[in-house]
Length: 261
Image 1 (cartoon, rainbow, N blue to C red):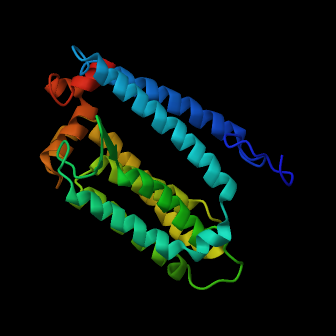
Image 2: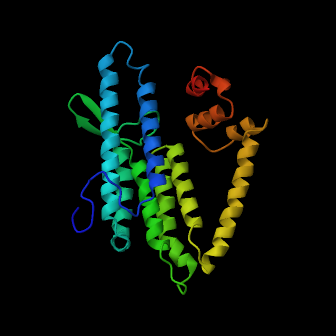
Image 3: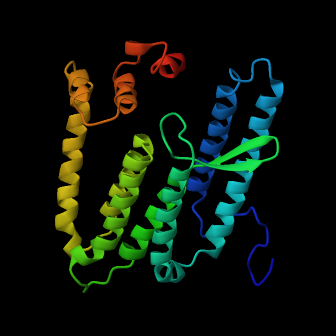
């Protein structure tokens, strides 16, 4: 102990939510098992590939957990608010930087880092999800009873979210990550409680209900026809169609879903 604080680098702060911490650990371990399991087919005839993949993922998981705890202990809300613009610029830059690398599966969403004997890739959109939460909390996390127009408070984080999502969906061609980023931001915008925000949040909830109705329609008999007329890339349509009915193309886009089932 030092100045009443634990010096253990992997011990969560006393004020941390243990349930969230244990849930995250369980998901990380489950995800680790799934990544290793999905690599077994590629590793047939090359046992070293599976070992490298397992070691890489274990190292990333442990490093990520230690980094998370370190950031939790060092987190300072005032510092976050003072550096919000820097976080926005860095996030947009890294998202655009990924465009300089060759596409993988039709998406330019990964940054390749050369390491001897092993390929390491980073997906900037994963870090942008954290940035979105931080930026929204910086602008909406400590609102005063008397404040300027709600539109002025919403403007900066909303522009940041939309720009990030558009880069990921249109330029990186990664629809899945873009939708998740937008969903995270949508929920974050609904959390703050303030009189001037209620009108906007009411309409956001209304649009969300309409979206759920649209999703239900997609899984109806007319859903496949609706997907075909959507302004999306062919591989993006195939992913939606596979989610609706993976047996449409059982040996290609629906292969993993069918094996999972």
